[in-house]
Length: 242
Length: 290
Image 1 (cartoon, rainbow over the protein chains, first blue to last red):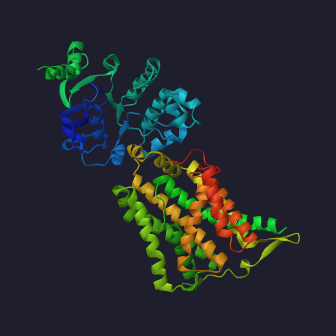
Image 2: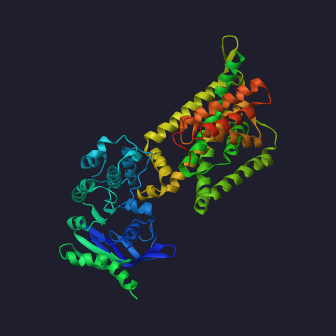
Image 3: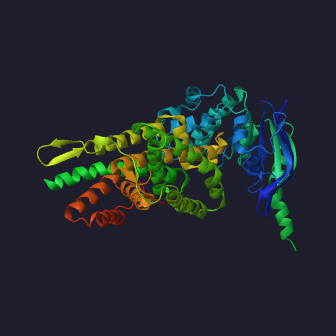
């Protein structure tokens, strides 16, 4: 069953169009990764799905329901959780308070303080510390924990490894299987292609706001994905030629 | 001994400033709205108490509840009907809305009740006092006001630190777009903040009216200045800071009055300016206000 269906999405900021005609589908329990270079429109797609960015055209269906016109805070209550790029913790609140605010969706489910601390044990030791005084990796862990506290059916992870040391990124990614086994579907944006290929079931490659390649991670060759990923560089190089 | 007495009186006076200032601080903290109508809303709170006692026959102590409930509801409505729209328009718009409210309130009050004082008497409690030694006497009512300030600030602090709506208020103050991602309608949070702010200022206004024995329409315009000063002296974003700020301002005014009857306001403002120059983040403020 499909958890999320995006049809012919177009979106942007003022007079800049970031997304042209993107369609994708995420089946329940699967992990779909959006792959593409910087500025390809991946974050804009996630923001449109979460309701932060209003689509210019197209529809977004979540669990069979058209949510295109539903505001972001109601989408969170329906079960769409976004871990935004840059984490956006509440800096003056403690780790535990950040997590507790995440429970504001009032959705029932497996995630609570206890289960989040079990999955991300480093947070338990830091739970009384203000979020502003955490390392980047700790902040990212809180951001993921906070989204899980809302018991989302669909978790949108935007560049969770950005600016973090590889070892820290490993720790963060160790949480992914536990999240999936709780029944949550994941839509992931990640710059690191190797890591993406390891965790993803399905892959959608985006180039300059359009889908250029999609399939299962087994069904797509690494070369094809790399070509789709770097397509922008080549097309730019072509444009630069006289 | 007159000096000690002046300081004690000043501490008592600080109670009303502190209650008034806490609501101002809350609205500014959550929405960055500097509510210029805060003093006039305080006066409105006093009128609601006075009118509910005189015309509706409500027992004087219960007028506090009437005033708090009505202004709290007004706060919710004001936020939903006017300030939300203003917040979406520009940074300047909410300031102008509150300025408009600050013009409307006293003028409507003059139309309805004339500019004469609207009385609210607390009887003997107004003059009863406790004596310490021969020189120092503390009025029961100012003492009750100070205790009320401590209780209100303590309750607000507990609410903000220990309850989910309180945590959500602080989270919204930190980052409103992000609370929406967690299923929270920030507009409702704003309405709650304004309702609490106006409920506390209604309490301040009622206590002030009881202390003065009555209220006139234009008294709020100076009070809003005191409330702003108390917030800034104490430190923006710190509830106990507003108590400290209120007390510092109260003592400054009271000691000023001891020196000369012309001086209380001037000394109060000078202390405020001194804090602004020497410790701009306020006495209990943690970081500079950006």
